[in-house]
Length: 274
Image (cartoon, rainbow, N blue to C red; front, side, top):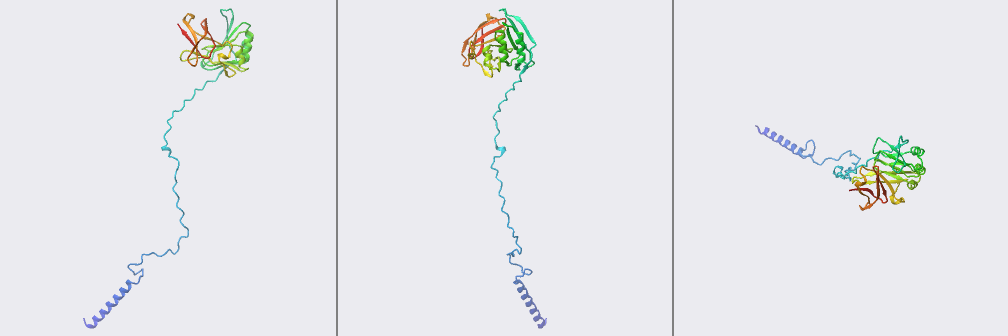
């Protein structure tokens, strides 16, 4: 090339180099290849501060699944006693003469439930008072193993009319209710509940006016009559078995299939066979 052309080219290259160098150091974000990395402040910051962080919920109670199961056996429910059968009238009344020449009036009460307690009403006992005569022996027997009760005031009338105790009982045994027992009831009721125990002995709980009556509370003790199938020759003795397992000999006799026992101490009746 001519010298003039070379000179022009050199001047042009120099001008371009200065332009590139000047552009590199302008700090223009549009042209700066390595701008300042520090961001500009937010021109419109949010004036509302962030709320406090919610603390985690801590359950102080133990986890139900971690609680050991209660393995204690539950107490079995007590059996519910059946309601008492109230007897307003006694249709089955029989009269016979015993070995002593006395007239025995036996009023037998039949119930559907052979374990139900029986409550003899005032009217039923009053009817017996009207039938009985002086010297008669009156027996009220319910065909059940439950308790049998009767109003003391009417029993007292029956005792006064006949001059003898009234036999009151169930299919296990009967108790001779005398004037003392009727008086102890205080105008309420006399209740007897003879029970045959697993060991073969017979317990004869007696209550008068809601109070338990011990044989020691009655002068002369409590006379008990028990139906039996053995004869007097087969019996070696009759004892009262006390709570401490000691035994007391009792006075007894057997007549026409019935064992008469005079219970003078608190205890169950034990028959000793030969």
